[in-house]
View 1 (cartoon, one colour):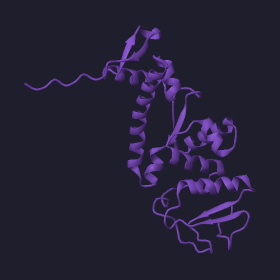
View 2: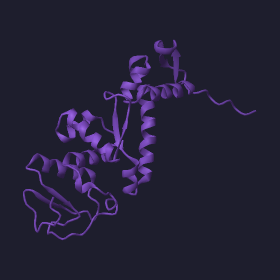
View 3: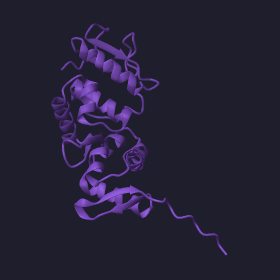
Length: 220
């Protein structure tokens, strides 16, 4: 792999300034265009005239990216932008089939850059790992990602109930791409909050909309 900065841009070499932090969408677009052509190299932190001005502080501590294939770079940039993807959704981003997208994600998991969520391949989804957010000096984003998705899951369950009248644990697993135990905990919380009512037990249990949280009684 070439490690010497080329003297100028060409069909297979592109310079990207990072002085004001190149946006994730712009990086995805550049990588996809390069992948759809003959392939090549994208030099981040280099001006159009070939001057190496360096990486933005948000990108300086991300190590190992120079050894990753284009599909992996697209995957990381896509996850940074969308927070969570399935293998099928990533396949659309990298213009490959779902099997190839899954292999790309598994390689990133082994590298410690991506976390998998969900118990089965059919329901599995992926997020950037805490390691990546720490390297980017953005620990708060990892916490927000986890917190927002938990709230989103509950909203998805309630929307499903409003649309279909009832929901079962298997429906929650499929809907939220999570494990059976995680689905159980979501339903348990919504039931405790009186947002859902349980009917039946064990495998026969299903849930319908509840009366909602109890109103606080006035202090006397």
